[in-house]
Length: 427
Image 1 (cartoon, helix red, strand yellow):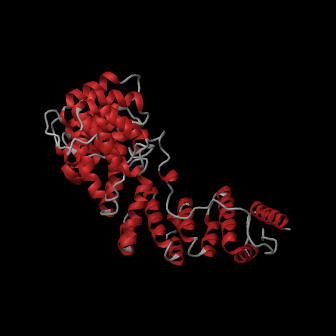
Image 2: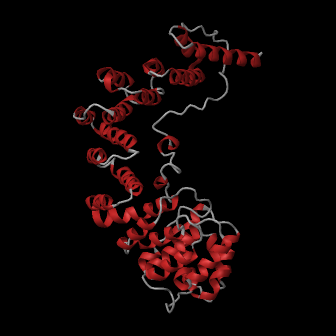
Image 3: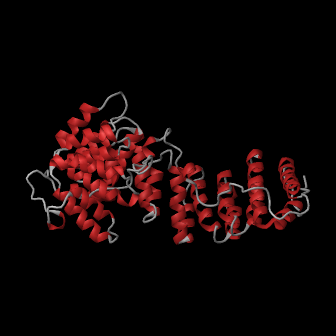
């Protein structure tokens, strides 16, 4: 029916509409902590103790026992006093230098008290590197004592993983034995995440073997995130892909393909797309979209030539979606022309993505394309969200468009209801 929207007598439209413009959101890209645990990054889900990595385990392959310990500031200062002094040093290089001296000066007996004091005041994100360094040093002095403390006093896995990574770096057999002996229950062993992290660059073969023993889980996804950078660095892209092909667990293989593709699609979108087409996974549609988006952002002609060689079907439509998305935010009219030229490859998902990407640049063109959707419920939802958001930006333009175009009755009713409600509150 022809829309009949109330006159624009208002200054602000109802509330704030949660309408997000842009590429696929994290929730749509990766809502798979249950359906695809391999996608869960080790950097997610962490609270205070997150986001830090320690390179100390790469600089020394032996424990600290017997090492000469330089004294912070060259005196026999009390470590607790030095801790307070260093916290107030703003210069990052000076802070790091003095912190390393202080950590190296600690005796085995001092670590527990020092760690407890350090944690007592809270650890801001910018000091997580210091905390990792401290835990690594303790692990090289007495890893079992460090793990016992972490198990009793911390809820977040960061501390245990950091300690186990350091221990595995110089004594993998002991670290693996401890991880196996202390795991309770039937699920994946969370301690293996730290062990694999410590082995990833020093013994990737052993790390890979331990990873493949783990059942599908968020823990295995975290361990995979720690291993892949090592495989890519040491084996190269071809070697890492060969490693993926050797995996017998379908879920682990799919998770590995997804992660590697995410790392390579910007640098080599065509090669990544080829690999995804040859090795389809449940995430291939999104990743092929992303690869063609990257390709079209660099050179639309190349992207269209690649697209034109694909056979009709889902893969071709996913590729078109990537090209449309790359074009829509800069030139919505050109993106519309591409949809018209390849109408047989346009799916509802292509249309939805076009609307999100073109709306800021040209809301009228974006809203006018919603009629391409073949699902009535999707049409109603898209019209409601986009028109309400457009009214927030330019109420009169949105109402004028609605009054001159055919809209679903439910959409008209909702818009009028919202406008009436806002007008009543304004009076």
